[in-house]
Image (cartoon, rainbow, N blue to C red; front, side, top):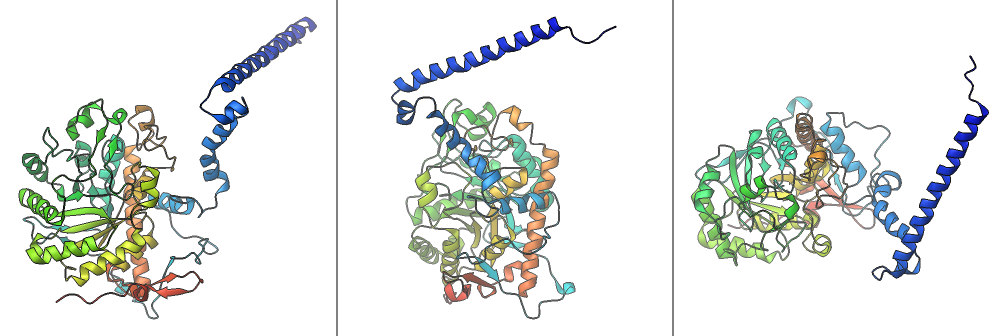
Length: 501
C-alpha cells in the first residue's frame, strides 16, 4: 500500500501553512499599528511618543540589561552589590565543596583598601592549631550568653523573608552552632523550629513586643525572654540600607500569620518609625537598654550605623558617669554599604559610613574608654567571605554577622526582586509557587556548610599569620593597599589608642 502523501494532500497542507503565515503576519502588523497609535498619543514617555513602537525596545533592554550583565558581560569581580566570585565562594562552601582553586588568584590586589594578610615567618605547627573559643556577652545580665561562634546570622525578619527560608536558616544555624537574629519582625514558630540560639531584635515599631499603641509591652518582653532559645535582645537604631529611616513591609507581604506575630493590622503597609520614641538622647537610650535588660534578664545591645563618631564618644562618657553596668552589652555596627532591606537610593548609596572606616574608629573609642571587656563589638556590612571576616576581627570586632551571605547559601541569585514578592528562589516571597523551589531539608545543610567553611578558612588565615585563634589577630597582621599600589600596615593607618585608666 502506498504510504506516500498524495499531491492533493501536500497542496492542502501548503495552503494551510500559507494562510497561517499571513494570519500571524497580519496579527503582528495589527499589533504594531495599535502600539503605534497608543505610543504616538500617550504623553508620559517622550521616547515612545517621538519613536512609536521601536521606542519600546529601550525600556525592554533596560529591564533586561542587569540580567545580561550578570550572566554574560560582567567579569567575575566587577558586579555590585556582590560580584560573581563572592557568590560562587558561598555557593561552593554551601555545597561542602573544596575551596582549592588552580593557577593563581583572579583578584586584583592593587585595588585601594584591599587587605593583605601578613604571613608569619615561623607560624605554629599544625598540631599547635587551636579552634575558635566561645566569648561571654553580658556579664551584668541575670543570664549572660557564652556565644560559641564568631560568625553569625544577622537580622532578617519573617515577612521580609519567607517561611521556608526562616525554617532552613533556623535549622542550619543550629547545625553550625551560631546564633540567628530574628530581625525586627517578631518571633515566629519557624525561628524556634531549628533549636538554634536566637537574638530577638526590637525595631522602632516594637513588632512582637508592642501594645496596641505601638509602645513597649513588658509582659510580651517577658514572654519572649522565657523562650529557652532566646539568648539576647538587640535594640535596632539603624541599619546600613536605610540609616535614619524606618522599615517598610508592604501590605502584599502581610499574611494573617505575619499580622498576628507582629501585632499589626492586615491590609496596610507595616511602617516602622525612624527612631525609638523612648530614646531621643544618649541618656534615654541607656535607660531603655537598662529597662529591657532588667525585664528580660538577658544581655541587651544596640544596632546602628556610624555617622558622627562623637556620638559614640558621648555614649561611652555617659556610661562612665553611670557605671559600666549601664552599658549596652554589645554594639552591632552596620556599614553604610550593608542591609538586605529595600531602601531609597540616596540612603542606600550616600548615607552612613562604610564599615571599613567605621569599625576601627568604634573599636578605638571603646578601647580608649576602657570598655573592651565590657562591650562586645559585632561587625556587619557585606562581610560574606573569609578575608572580609578575618579583616573585621583584626580591626577589632569580637563577632561578625551577615545576612546576604546566608541568603546566597539559601540559593539567592541576586535577582534584585526582594521588595516585589516575586523572588524566583523563594527566599523573599510569600507566593507558594516560588516558595516550592526552596527545599528546607536541602538548604539547611547548605547554611550549616557555609558557616563551617567560613569559620574554618578564617582559622586558616589566623594560623598563617601566626596566631592560634582568629580573635588574636591584630591590625599589625594586615596591610592595606594604597593608591600608589603599595601597602601599609593597618596599625600604622589606624594606630590603637591607649586604654583609659
